[in-house]
Image 1 (cartoon, rainbow, N blue to C red):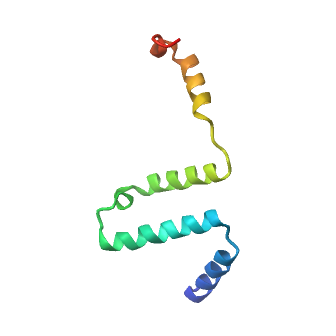
Image 2: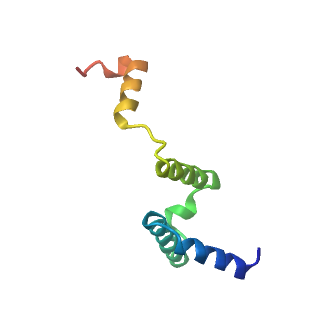
Image 3: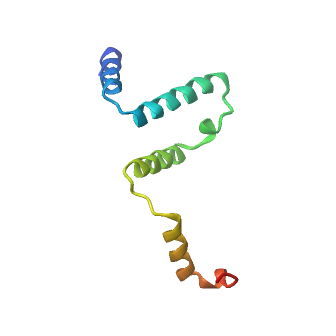
Length: 88
């Protein structure tokens, strides 16, 4: 796919995108444009593996594939009760 086709595809996707996707795209472009001004941004210092991990986590959040803090704490207290002796 050449550059003109890619631009057209992205334009069509933007036209059909919901507000959440548009906010994500705007944030991406803001970050990208700010990187040109400064190469010391945290995003530039991340490894490819870290960036992929963040992308995967964002997909999970978007698909409501998350676990509540309360459930995580409950499981942690059961697995490691000796670290929670001071709590009721």
